[in-house]
Image (cartoon, rainbow, N blue to C red; front, side):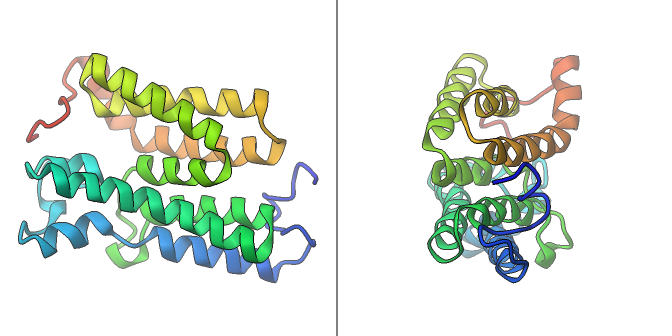
Length: 210
């Protein structure tokens, strides 16, 4: 498999149509806004009107409903994993990577919400679980360790996001490393405001209402 195959949108047999199908599948699954749907179903209103305005689990936690936040985390991760698994089973490994990348992008830029979604951390983890469980374990271990020590979700995400691509280039296939690196770059870009607040010592802690 060549270096450019994922970037050229080619699946394992070299054709374009399955690759486009994988991208569409991944994007549509990834763009399901579980955080918004669950909070509305629970009678908590529009999650985008509180805290950071994001639709992810960290902001759902700001409602005070831990079970709802956990459900959001699991579902946001699951949609990334499911996209990868369906594409792998039907279209091959390269299509699986494309579907995972598209699911991740769909969560962050969902068409249904004017392309304003979450920051992608849970979906990133779900994609990793299905593509390379070793990298997912590394991500989860680092996130949990940093979150326990610092009590800051964004710091935990940033540390894990920086470490995983490094491990992917050392351990994994080249195409996997490319996809993981692309996702990590997007996560860091989406956390640029958090990075500024971390530097200023103003980043809220886990469970904070702000």
